[in-house]
Length: 155
Image 1 (spheres, one colour):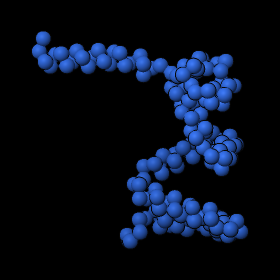
Image 2 (cartoon, rainbow, N blue to C red; image 1 turned 120 degrees about the horizontal axis):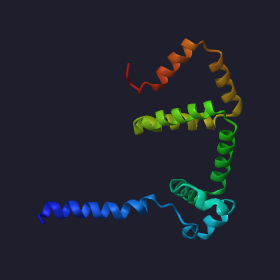
Image 3 (tube, rainbow, N blue to C red; image 1 turned 60 degrees about the vertical axis):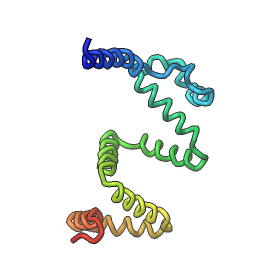
């Protein structure tokens, strides 16, 4: 057998062995005790979940366990806001998030900085800015957005 054929055969064997493992989910017993306590309501139908969903839930539980009290509170608020959205609003939010993720890292950081500055403003000032934005015409809003999305020092 030539070296190339051996390598191909080895790759095929490895793929055959890793394929089923990659398709497997997370066994309930493989979760940490803390994850099991957190996910206890899922226990009875854990094995009915798709393997990918099991992995997602297990990762989410681990992230939750690593959060501090403030982060957990914020996560609860975001989840409640998400639950209150219509399917159309959720789709729009997903699309905006994907647009944000496609931005260059420097631009994402700039937008996060603008958001942080906005959040640090007194509530009255934020309300005033929102009201001023609502009073703009669609053309004025579009122009403002284009100016905001344009990287600094560019015409």
